[in-house]
Amino acid sequence: MPTPALLAGLLLLLGCAHSQPPTSASPLDYLELDTPDGWQLRVHGDGSGTLTHRQHPLHHLDYPARTFPSGTPSGRGRRCRPDRGVAGYYQVHYYLARQDSAYSCATDSATVQQLMHTAIARMQLAVDDAGSERACRMLRRTWLAAN
Image (cartoon, rainbow, N blue to C red; front, top):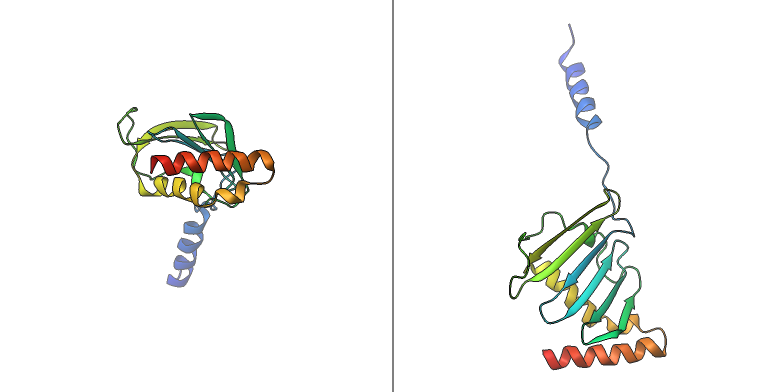
């Protein structure tokens, strides 16, 4: 007959056997954000990203790793609507490399909006040569004119 301490130890061991280790975002994961006013921001699993605007397709900014919160591309549990083309909503496209899965949705989530504000606030981090400095000026002017 097993003792209560042995049963408790066995239950604890069995409970731990089914736990899964935390998964971290892969640098290949990404979240792509399309705003209603023409901005496109892609954030990778390592926190790097790229910002562009449809009026200036030749100008873009490349942000270094850890500019954006790590793990951003997972997107699970965020408020999303499956329908597309909803006025005032951001279109979000997710790609998860480990599952080789992609999905899209429309959202007005404050978390997703914060990513765009982070990109604008940290534009100077993306300037590493004369070309990106010009892109930074062009994109900043576009942002200021729209806001």
